[in-house]
Image (tube, rainbow, N blue to C red; front, side, top):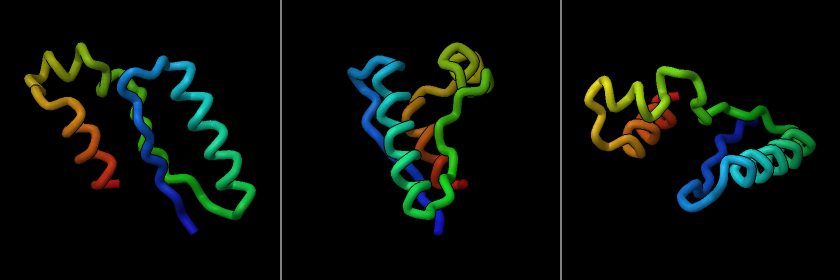
Length: 69
């Protein structure tokens, strides 16, 4: 079984996002799920690099990438 996490990020600190995500991952793995990583943290997906490439709808770009996976 596989699980993909989707969580609200707007208005949350990076620490809040990571803590919530880690808690969910721990619970899902304990239930036997393999986690599909859709948290894109490499430099290619940094706000600065995406703006350099002309990406206007950054949240939509992240959604498209997650759906592709």
